Length: 295
Image (cartoon, rainbow, N blue to C red; front, side, top):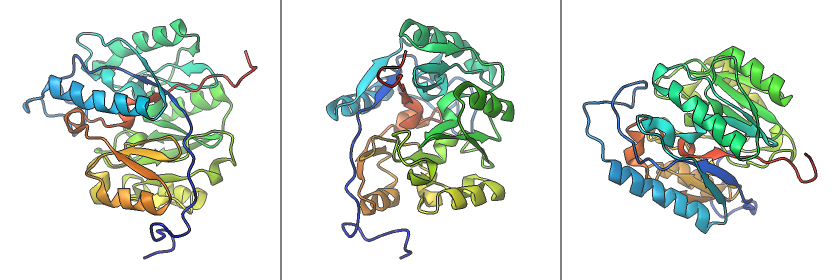
């Protein structure tokens, strides 16, 4: 056993849960009618009622653990709106909208920006192609940004300009992991605490090119490196409040790695929504409000 994988219960720090505010969308219109990623097979039947029931478990679990969940109304003929992480990127009350690469999702852009505006966020309409928190992850005070399949490097430049943050670009190379949030999980989601190097992440090395693997190894030497098997069941498409990590029940080795670090895995089965190429994090957009006293 490597030094990066401590024995569960020994020297594991006490993790603290932080209340989060999330945006979700009930999958009332979920189905797979087209294919825009390797997970989507239109010939394979989908069960909308099952998708709703699984989604409801995630929603109820967030509430039970003290988190706030806002809802955006689902729109007919936009089955992927359930994947709210792709709807924008929000820091300090500023919401950067999205510009999807694929035509099938372009209809989601305006409803999300309208929701942000109606709920008091300062909305920035994007000019470059990028797909929100699917490819942008806030880690400490920096932003990890994915490219290779969906978001453009121009989108990385735009997110840096909008939020004035250091942006670390990473290139994805496996089409199964077409968004960054399928290959990296942020385990300590509180910004401004210790900077990027103090934040814990988990990631799937094989999802990235060699240059990006070197960057991740240098910036996050204590990161959890997840197996290909757990990556393949969307184990890294996870959400965390700093203590509870909401993950696929099939990512069993990852769950043990989390326990060894003092986290509490919370298994949630979203297998039906995985048929559309999304999991727990895809269904969870974090709403980061302005710090108290700033308007």
